[in-house]
Image (cartoon, rainbow, N blue to C red; front, side):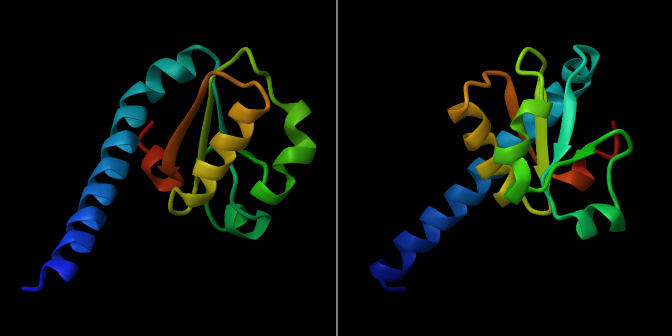
Length: 115
């Protein structure tokens, strides 16, 4: 196989493995974060949230998060989730840029159903 093809494939595999590992680490923390009165913020659209969600989670679509940031308590853990982990990554970055320190990206909302 050509080297120009192998290196991008290896990079993609490493990236996917890293993302899965970071989500796994966060999911292990979820029970303790919830005991600390942590909140699950689902950043999917309202229609996506209505079609299925984690009981007790709060829907703040990513497009509205910047305007609704004052609804969140920056002293409590915040666990963000979405459909695939992409929007929750952006949500986490936004919250951190606004001074939130205890923000965790759980990736897919369905992964939180076991808690």
